[in-house]
Image (cartoon, rainbow, N blue to C red):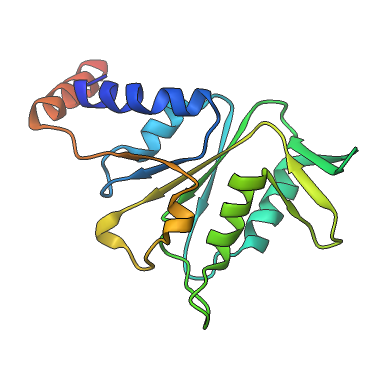
Length: 178
């Protein structure tokens, strides 16, 4: 571990432990995915966001990864594996807005953050259990501006490239293991 990575882990670890939604901002290749792997136990499901990624995409993936059972206030959804599941929305700035300047995926993620669930196709309430929400953005590659309403749902960590000194350490570790 480098001093930079330890700093980012120390900043984000309390957020992960409290199971609060996390947004990681940083340029490509700075270690956002590595940080998520280090912070969250269990399974990480990557949802690579593009202009066509929608709430339906996420609901379909959740149905594949989770079981749903009746509960007092609707349905309760939990990971099939029995381990915690982290949904990692990579490039969450990429989905396109509609003619009303609304990004459907952002509205859906906001609902998951605020209410810890959603209404499915049959209009049943589905509550998420043992599922963490993480999103990442590359500010230099921002196609769709993120609304304040969307951003307000997340704790935000900004990650930057590692120093030259740390790169020497990282590659030194790789070479000694070979």
